[in-house]
Length: 384
Image 1 (spheres, one colour):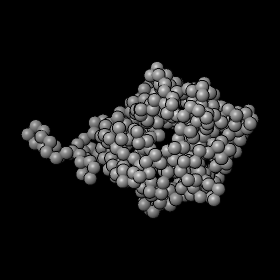
Image 2 (tube, rainbow, N blue to C red):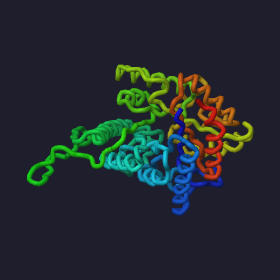
Image 3 (cartoon, rainbow, N blue to C red):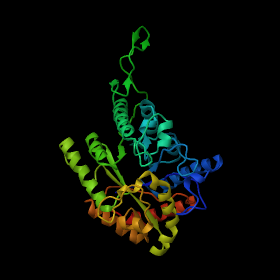
Image 4 (spheres, one colour):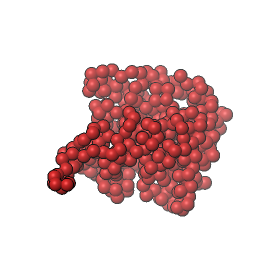
């Protein structure tokens, strides 16, 4: 089993929890934001030392509230690659519509090559209108449910951009013509002629993996058709099982071949380890509640199960007890965590790619380092 770690990369907070302040009432200094970035690098080096397979960042912008302060996972990843030896480095996720697709391809290839083939291409469409609309795209979300047209445009833009990126990364020369993008643009003069094709410099020198979050039925159809890996997070364990199996069926239908056990599917879980379950719940509760105070308004809890057995309505702010029941948070002793992961391994028919989320919003990085170390020393040796 390949096991990685994923961190949002936020500022340490002394007032995290379910109550005040509201997320938008916080504002942190530039120095505090940068200190969080330095601490994220320290956690990446620690993960490399502890033997984790991968370390995942996240791309977000303009979050003065201090939750996610790394705007460029590729640049960050290049720095981390120089400080580490073995760990693979990815972003959950590079928000494709917020990049020029050829710049994203160039930067990824540079990170991949400078790391000796350790970069992972994580891609997503985005969830935050504040970021999307300021950086060249648009997105429909729980914040703007009237934006169905914007969401459709975002999907088309993402689809075309990914076609461009994959062509640019894999072909000696390429061209592309779509509704959103055309490369090269027609009529570019070049030394007595016109540019007919482009060549990306550099291209990857090593094979690479592409992973995308799967949160909706359209994406559950799209990602396996493309042949990329699917990332599953914050879903009730029964819904995770349904998506997991449907991904495999859709992949087989598209490619006429069956996947190996756990192949091209990655599960993210949020563990917290202490000497007793009661202690673990007490320690993680404020960070859990801050997580949902931050992300609940964006509809992130729609993968939870409601009392009728159907997905919860968007906007649910779950309790820690509900998250434990859904098995999105795994809370207890190291042995409890091993037991929960064994449940997933059996339920999913084989768990080969696992990523943990051990840093709740507001947590100190000392606590994060302790959680990473305990998982590596007390849980990893018991996983097969």
